[in-house]
Amino acid sequence: LGIITMVGHFQNGVEGNQLTVAYSILVSFWSVYFLSKWKRRQQELMFLWGTQDYEASETPRDEFIRFARDPTKDGVVFKVSDITGKMEAVETTPWMKYVRIAGSVAVIFFFMVLVYLTVMFAMWVKLDDTNYASQIGSLISASSIVIFAKVYEQVAVYLTDMENHRTQTQYEDAQITKSFLFQAFNNFFVLFFIAFLKQSTIDSVGFIEVDARNSTCILEEIDCDPDDLHAEVAQNCINGKLQVPSCMTELQTQLLVVFCLKQVLLGSLEIIVPLVKAKTRAAYIQAQMDALKTAGKSLNDLHASSVGEEYR
Image 1 (cartoon, one colour):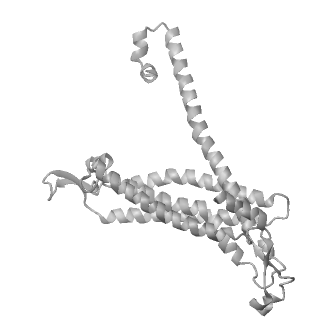
Image 2: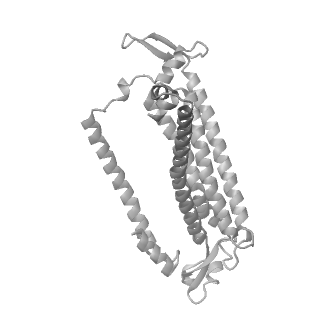
């Protein structure tokens, strides 16, 4: 259905494609239906696997317990639980957890500001009159999305570790929340800006000229009726056609570059990086084994070495 809608874009233009409205409504209903079915299936599996109310009986994380056993750290101690009567690791200063979370929020906000500044820089590059300026700006946006995502992935793990959550579920929930907030902003802000914010800055009365700061947007022709338009706008309705500014073409270019580059680059990294690491490690171990054999070591000595253990 999406392909059919896209064909309509090519035939009638983005603004004149009537399939867009129907497709958008269909996707809205489909998303609600899909999530409802997903939640129902989730409840079924929780019942079958016996994982309902799992969090109520979840044991503390090993990292949380080690924190309590470390005499150099403060805030987590062992005490007898009023519920179970057993020694358990508990926080003596629960309010410190919220202080650490506030620090994490500040770091997330800082990364969001960096994303915003990068998007503004990419938009500024697109205003250049040189060839391929729009593509270069889109490439900058797409590259920044991949780079920020990789850097933030490591930062999110560090921030979640710093918060020192008691259970694994709390730890994972905190990390998912951090990732979702930033990744959603990082991936979609540039698209949201082009689709809604940038187009709204164009002069809505003087349709003939597109503002210089929005030169990457183009004029689209739509059907019009002078009797249904404001007087200042009706004068631009010539022969039943009205030229209106649209950034949808730029949005299409941005979507194409972002998704293609992101999929190709991230997919390549997920394949190439582990492959290179595996080949390098195998070559290193083989070299060490050859050196041990050259030195006249027996097979037992070889297997007893750390290299031999790794090889096995």
